[in-house]
Image (tube, rainbow, N blue to C red; front, top):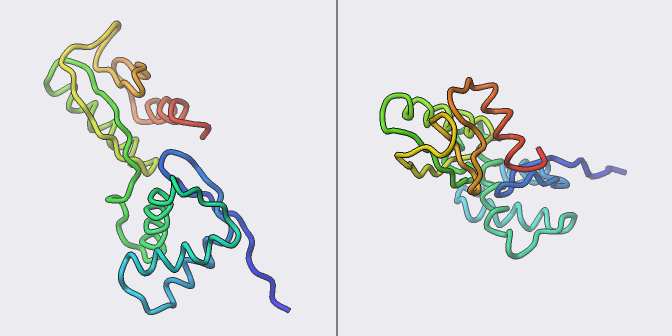
Length: 160
């Protein structure tokens, strides 16, 4: 008798890490199906996963994006276009320093499979600039290295 793989794989659905039962098997099934269209592959994976996972209707599109990302990851293809978007603000005087900070923000978010949607403000709030604002709260001020900014963003965004 063969047993199904009920292992849980964590994926990013929107901004939340979610455990999905049987994801590896669903990806393998999709890869072996002969289907090539994105929507067909994701439909097949959704069908495979709904038996053992609760997928709220309001999260359906975010799940579909996450599943497509996993298909592309399995194929070894670039999936950065499907990173989850996060609205952020970078405050500070326009120029090279703010531009470098914005690039650092993009790099840190990419490492978390997130895509910052950056709004720029010319004036920094209290404290040194440039500043990173998420959800209306200043989470980073002044010069940061990648490791420190990564830790700050991880702490800020959720229970990661």
